[in-house]
Every structure is written in structure tokens, then in C-alpha cells.
Image (cartoon, rainbow, N blue to C red; front, side, top):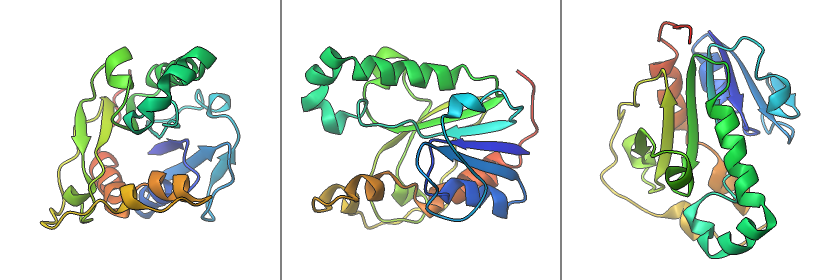
Amino acid sequence: MKVLIACEYSGAVRDAFIRHGHDALSCDLLPTDAPGPHYQGDVRDILGDGWDLMVAHPPCTDLCVSGARWWPAKIAAGGQQSALDFVRLLMAAPVPMIAIENPIGCISTYIRPPEQIIQPWQFGHGETKATCLWLKGLPPLLCTYIVPERKQACHLLPPSPDRWKLRSTTYPGIAEAMAAQWGCLTVRQA
């Protein structure tokens, strides 16, 4: 299967799909943190390249509820509308199977509610971090390993230049579940 991991610099989801035998490419404006197939540039340049599946992680800076206190300024500056337009573009991409991943935020209000909300503790990690999935042509992810203890590790990170990167990287258990469960699906043309 030909898989595009949009707006991913970490390589976490890309590498999970590669381990499952797929032709996967990550794409981000930033260079990749992990060696592997990566297009450094605007995802719009390659959206029409015949992908079977896309997992997209659009930047949440102007969208997620954790930044709601700054929304009036972001709305006034046009940042939130631009971010929502980018999400709409990804949702409408010519790809038969699409998952858009983002924290709880304004996508649910201005575009549509997510098909699923997952937590890292449902996939082998003890952290809490509600993550929404908007799905096209894909089933919801099934939990793989529920961890009974919960902690809010990513929410309690001290300020640092890399805090945003640490908070936005996909947990390995979630990446593995995406690759294992969605990578075995038959491609249905849209």
C-alpha cells in the first residue's frame, strides 16, 4: 500500500507502516527526525501522487483547545481560518482512506465532530492525551493494550524550546495500531 504521513517530522507513523511492509513517506516543512523516506516541503505538492492511505497530523497551534485563550487573536489575524482551510483541504484530498489526527479543538465545531477520540493509555502508554480522529474509508482503531494507571506527563512538561515537539509526537503504540489495523485494509477507490 502507498501511504502518505502528512505533517510528520518524527517518522513515528511512517516507520510503523514501513515495518508492516508498506511504501510509506512522511512529509513536513521540517526535516525528519529519523532517517527514512521523507519529503521536506508542502504536502500540497504531493497530495495527488496516487496515495492509498493518508494519515495527516495538521499543525494544532491555531486549532487545539489548550490554546483557546489565544483564539481571539488567532481569529483576528486569520491564523485559525487558515488552519481550518488546511484541514478541509486534507479531508478532501484524492485519497481513498484518510485519517486526520488532532487534539480536541475547533475542528469539531467548524468542520465536523471526529469519528473517534483515542487516548495513549488505550495503546500501551500510561499517559492521558485525548486525540481526535476524523476518518474517511477507515474503521475506528481498536484498543490494543489498556494501561490501568494514568498520568498527564505530556501536559506537565516544563517550558523548553522542544516542548511543542515532545507534545506532538505520536506515541509508538498508536502508530503501531494504525499500521497494523489500517495497513491490512483493501483499498477501495473513492
